[in-house]
Amino acid sequence: MIRVLILGGTRDAVDLAGAAALDETEVIYSLAGVTREPNLPGCQVRTGGFGGPEGLEAYIQSTGIDAVVDATHPFAAEIAANAFAACQQTGVPRLKFLRPPWQPGPDDDWIEAASTSDAAAYLADHPGTAFLTIGGRELAAFAGLPNCRFVVRYIHPPKGGVPLENCAVVVDRGPFDAAGESGLMRARGVQYLITKNSGGEGAAAKLGAARSLGIPVIMIARPAPPEGKIAGTEAEAIAWLQSL
Ligand code: NAP
Image (tube, rainbow, N blue to C red):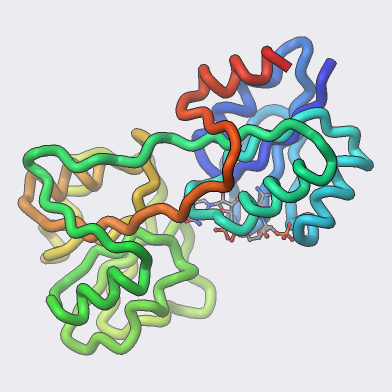
């Protein structure tokens, strides 16, 4: 029997936790605790930060974790770095589960941005109505753009409001399909889609909608993952666990 800590917070991580919890594998699924009513796997779940890399190191040791799969979102750079450091310190094997990034096709019109602030700088120079699908934490980067309008989608109504003027809030939870995304973008007069390059199928419908409507996509590049082994698919991650 091995005890595996899966650092989660994404649909892919929930699916992986379900698939990994086989006879010889005990899975503990970990969440930051930032989302209300999160999707959960059927295995044991713990919630909340560990207290930096040292806290995670202590958790790994006290809980007898044999392996860590970091299946957090590609943009969750802090927990990824903490997992790298804690596993280095404890000598526990770690795998980064990371879907390949989306790539533009011939019919896509992508503007590549190195960061959220880079995307905001582009919009400042090319104002318009932007559908922002970057999560709630970094919206302030788009504040102070009086010639722009925004459509922001949340899973739950935002507590404490939205830090943007000229902003329409849409409350909805995926999965979304291309027809629904097209309808939303058309109805709201969207001229740009701004998104993080999350990869995977779950959030890709908006890209298909932008393509069919001829809407440019301001695509924010991922931070580099920590060094070490990466699995791009659930099957690769399961194979890695089975090899332990
Ligand atoms: P982050 O900046 O990398 O992490 C911030 C802190 O949150 C970490 O230092 C850690 O606290 C805690 N944390 C993050 N993920 C955790 C987990 N799975 N289990 C326990 N503690 C965790 O992360 P973030 O970008 O705020 O994302 C937070 C969560 O939302 C992640 O689990 C991620 O998978 C999910 N998510 C993020 C995005 C995104 O765009 N960033 C999108 C979708 C889902 P301590 O230092 O105290 O341990």
